[in-house]
Image 1 (cartoon, helix red, strand yellow):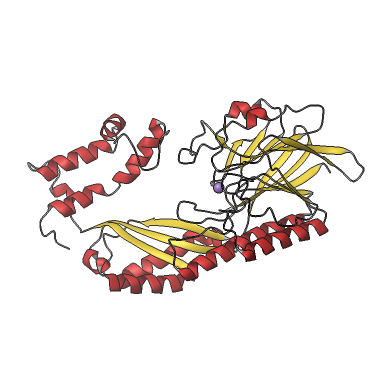
Image 2 (cartoon, rainbow, N blue to C red):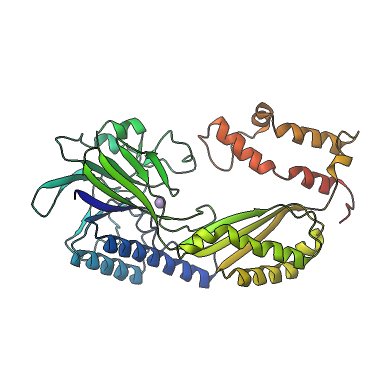
Length: 417
Ligand SMILES: [Mn+2]
């Protein structure tokens, strides 16, 4: 049967969630433990041989007593079922002097890669035949700057090799905002002749290479904010031979953060009509609900809206938010109305002999002229450095959405509702 395992990363147990109120903080931390437990249950039900954890199992060295006990218990359950655990610490849970799980008595199935020097474990099947070599390395400090992957040994012989590490793979699109800890390149990973690279660090799910080697970031196990949206989970991997690898993503019930933009507000006549329109958003996350996840939803209202003043009334907004949250049967809802503007016919002002006319013509040009957009772009962007021009253009265009109505709304004195 070869070697079958679950690959997960970035569980971030005991994230402080400090921007939330106390009740939600506790709920979210409970949910993090539950999602880890759900992943363990999946591994048990599939009767895999091992679990590979590619770093950031917990968020910081202030781990709660409850979480310590919880982790120990989960590992014991796995031990009783003969499931091995290979865990390579990352930058949030480095195995340094202050490693907070140092004092825990782990069961014998838990193998922690305590050093940044790679170590190898050969895994055997029930007949004693080697089925895989797992090579892993952990972070020893919270700012590992060296290329650890380059120190991994090359695969030898006919047994499939699996690399386990928390690392930043440079030159891959979509990773620009992450810290470059334990940086390496795709070439470094490919040069080792491994069958599978079990990576951690990037919180979005990414299959960097499908085959020879298969290189996967499973993403974090549970979204923690609106920067970590969508369905989260783990990879189930089966390796039967050096080049016979099946890697499949499985969603794990947890918390799903999701944002929905609603822009068709021009004809919304009153708040009841707005309420009905927004309740329909429920259709858009039925996939997340169907896996058993709790939904944290953000609705962004944008564009022109005749209810501009009604919506900016805080009491109205609080009431609307609560009724919609109840109707959708979700844990958390926020409605962001920062991007709505009064209802204005922009065409009346386009090409006019005034500043608004000029502003509108520049904005219209920016909608298709990439060079002009890049020329006007500030040197430093909030989403970080290292973006290529296409990514910059995409980001800048997202910032410009609805800006024409907003400018008009601000520049026309006493603009009507
Ligand atoms: Mn992480």
